[in-house]
Length: 370
Image 1 (cartoon, rainbow, N blue to C red):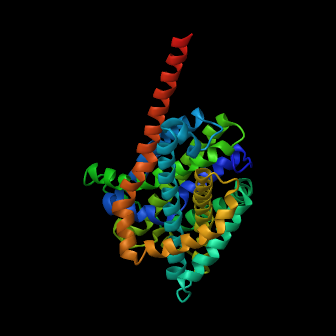
Image 2 (cartoon, helix red, strand yellow):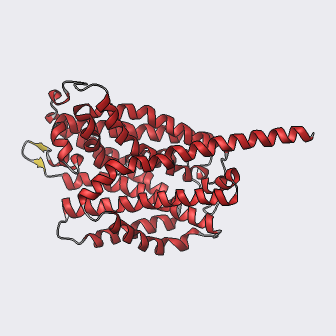
């Protein structure tokens, strides 16, 4: 391993949970409601089963090669050149995902909090933090995530508790008014975020005990789905399906609506800390995986030399990927899901099947020579 750091199963579970929440907490309510309307919460519930199956797929693949990175066992399974080609594809996916999320946080800050601040400034400042985290190694930013997780839980609980008096049950009625098809339409968009958890495969070899890593991976995914289902249901119950669809950041609007006795209000900036925590963890893991993958592919001894120049490139790519908000919304709604299917489902299944066939062939060959 290029990074010799180790993380505990508990830290891996927290990383998996915060990674799964990531930017999805900003967009999932509106994206699922576009198709599912008031049944968006059902779309999120279906995602629990899908998330479990996807995580089980990634765990099955990682457990077969517990001490190797996906960039290494891709070559073991597919051969040197084809394996490197697959590794490059994964690296590109990790990098594009990180770039998109970097732009998301720039857009969020400049449109909701600091409207007169140039977006480039926000991107550079946040990128500096990401680079520092990645250069410190997986062990360091895993500990930071462990420290930040209680604050996330506290702020999320405050948000749900203080907005709950405004819940209106009639906003989710009638249930399944348009049948089950719109529910699966909303779930299709939700699944696009679940597929991104394939990136956590890169962290799997760093966990001290592979068996515990598998349990932590699955539990972290279930925790992420729990929080996303809660925020989706609350958004529909408070804002209504029609209003949720129109909002760019419905969960932020929930925080704006908090008002307790006309005294405890205007705390949405405090609530924004929730999304800064989850986005920091997710972008850091994506950026770490990108640097690690490039180092493995090029045969470098240390990935840290790549962090600064690659960070500069990522800022440029982030600005290029989102020329305007309608373009970004269209990309996330129509393109991201099929694009993620390639890396989150098809390639892992390919590696799993080919790896099993290759092991069976080698076993038969050994028995034939005996």
